[in-house]
View 1: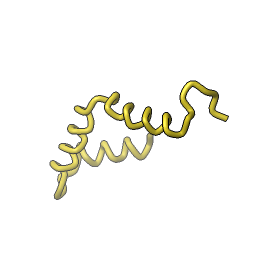
View 2: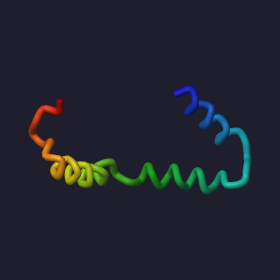
View 3: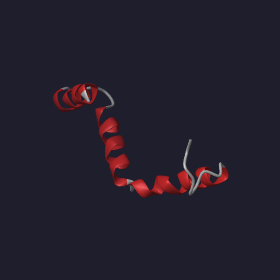
Length: 56
């Protein structure tokens, strides 16, 4: 969390080459819903036969 705080401070305070691209990248990743990543995870777990079982 400390590293994230430092990164946020740098993005807020300083101007550097590529800052707009970094901020745009953060914006795009926030716009993608989290459940989109669930389908590949479900398919991977299904192929490994670990659905509805205790993982040991």
